[in-house]
Length: 413
Image (cartoon, rainbow, N blue to C red):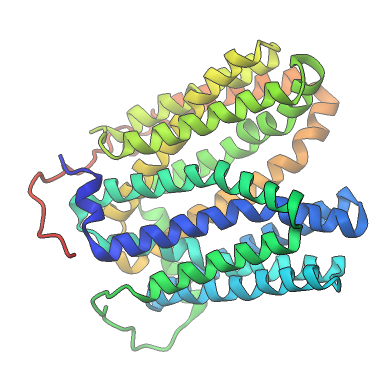
C-alpha cells in the first residue's frame, strides 16, 4: 500500500504540505497573543471574548463566499491572496502593539478582517489537495495534513505563550505574520496544470445554489455534516467548556485538565498516523462507532472520575475525530466533482463553524439551569443514540471506499 514517502515525493504536495504546516503553527500561536494583548490594554475578559467572536463571526459569514471563489478561480492563487491578507492583518496588529499605539477597537476590527481572510483558505485547500496528488494517494495526503494540524497545536501554543511572557504579544503576532508570508511564498512556488477557465459571467447566487445541489446530492454528505455539527453543539462544546471548571473544583486543578487535553492531542496525532495506512472499506460503519466512543469521556467527566481515566478516554476521542476527518476529506475529494469541491467543503466548514461557537456560548448557561452532570450525560447519550440512527440510513451504511491502487504513478520531483 502507498505510504507517506510516496506522497512526499510529489513536489507540489510537498510545497502545499509545508505551507499548511507553517500556517497551522501560526494559527495556534495567535490566540494567546491576541488574548493577552487585549487584557494588557483593557483587563476585560468580555473584550477578549468580543475579539474572538469578531474573528469567528466574520469567518462564518464569509465561508460560502470563499467556496464560490475557490471553485471559480485558481485555488492556489486564492490561498496566496488569503495568506497575503492575513500577513497584512497580523503585521498591522503586531506593529500597533510594539509601537504602543494599539486600541482595543482596532484589534477587534482587525480580528474581523483576519477571520474573513482565512475563510477563503480552507475551502481552497480542500479543493487543492486533489490537484497535487493522484487519487491513489489522497488518503495519505490527508493523513499528513491531519498530523501537521494536530502537531502544530501544542507547539504553536507553547511558542506563543513563551513569546507573550518574554517579549510581548506584539512580537508574537509579528511571528504569526511571518508564517503567513512563508506559506504564501511556498504556495507561489507550486506549478500546477492550468484548469479550464470559466468563461461565463460569474453569478454568485447561482453558483452558491449549484454548490448546495452538489452538497445535498449525496445523502451521506449532508447528513453526516449535520450530525457532526450537532455533535459540536451538544457533545463536544459542553465537554470543553465545563471540563476546566470541574477539573478545578473536583479533580485537583489545572494539572488534571492538562492530562485530559494532552490525551486528546495524543489521540489526534495517532488518528492522523492511522489515516496514512488504514481505510475501512465500509467507512461510516467503522467511523460512526468510533465517534460514539467519545461518549465515554463525557460520562467519566460527569462522574468526576480520576483525571488519568478521563485522559485515556480523551485519547480515544481525539483518535476518532482525527481519523474520521482524514477519511471524510478523502471521501469528499473522491466523490465530489473537482469544480464543485470547494463549495461543498465550504458548506461543511460552515456547519461546523456555526454550531461550535453556539455550543461554547450556551454550554455554561444550560449547565447552570440543568446541572453540569446532566448536561454531560445528555451529550454522551446523544452521540450514542444518533450514531445508531445515522447508521440506519442506507446511503451512509452502504457507503464503500474506493479501492486503493497499489501501482503508483511516477513521482514528480
